[in-house]
Image 1 (cartoon, one colour):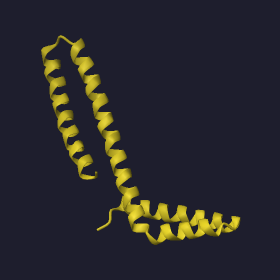
Image 2 (cartoon, rainbow, N blue to C red):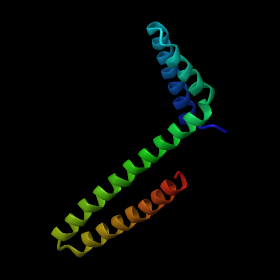
Image 3 (cartoon, rainbow, N blue to C red):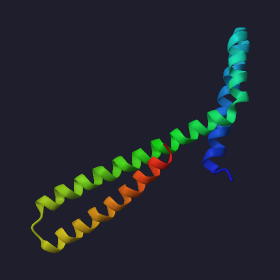
Length: 111
């Protein structure tokens, strides 16, 4: 079953290529038109690659956000002397580490 994201990316990709085809037609560039038609004929491969790149990019953004949050928590941990607060911060960092491992696993599965 195709995901809604993949369906949307497919629609966008096809629309963009049809726009390019129309532009090539207006310019009278037959070679470009043929190139675009060839790409449209291989749409599934192109859309799949585009989809995987999009998923990987989103996962890396989440990974980076988690790293930033961990750095922020680490700075907060260094600043506090309250043992209860330190324990809370360590727990939050552990949860983020677990999330980061899961995201890394997903990134690797889409490679």
